[in-house]
Length: 397
Image (cartoon, rainbow, N blue to C red; front, side, top):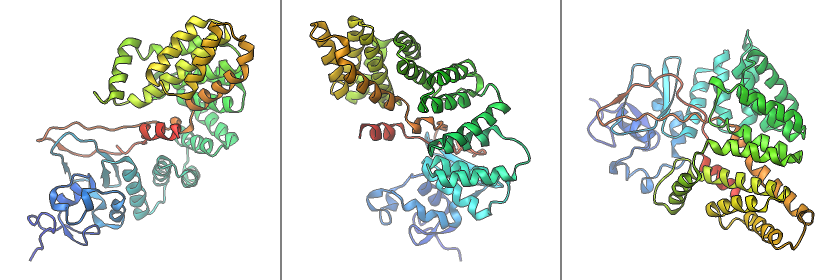
């Protein structure tokens, strides 16, 4: 006699659930893994919250589904999946997806290039850099041909560990395979910038922009950040302003964007990249303002600090810059007397605009479906995750 699911008491059980310590059907198991809980879970999940209890799923038979199985979604939903060797794992949380991906790969036993490549990819996305490097190096030892993607992952991993020599070595290997590899040029530029080789970094940022093409990612505008910072380090203030304006062109009209971002701050609307855009624009405006001050163009400096104040009026650096502008307007001091403060403010901006976490590419997979739709999962939708809001909070601290 078949036993019924302990959650719904309707369907025959399919697995033994580590969460509830009892039998569960496939449907209820799927709902748990997608954080789609009903009141029937109240006896097993405190306050209907999952937190990290999903880790109990890692040792469960229900962790994976076979290629013939489908997920039935009742409403619009975002799902991350990894399909490999006849089975797949899934989650609506990118970090959980990568944890499950690692567990699945360990279950089948890594033995070939792709096993270790996907293992390294998951570790990298979880910021477990040492484990990522070990897996990628193993993949490299098993490969009989050069791989741009593998070399780029190794470069990014070594860069995270501040091993610039190894990072540059693998970047040059990836660029040798694809001489139009925009992301590779950009990371190479960032490394040269951190090594204070500013002219070299400028050359690579320009190469990255020249070769955006199909390798363009969500952070291609970071080239303009890098260029602006390198120009600033070289004292080329007019080029800082020109480069910053090129970046601002991608944001469209200021008045329109200002209203959207202010509504987001007030909670009247939700803008997907609202916090990120406010953060980036604030720093670009500050950098432009300081460059205008260096050129003694007070009115232009005032224009951009006012924009920064609109987005982030309580920022201490903005208050300092505003004080310098007021002092210059009243001829209290020559610009040279503000030099130390200006340099300190520039360093703050430069550190903000080029944070290593921002080098992680985002592959946000969203599948919009209606109540009657059925989603059949396809290979390797599990991408690289980055929570921008968490990143901004980390910076603010």
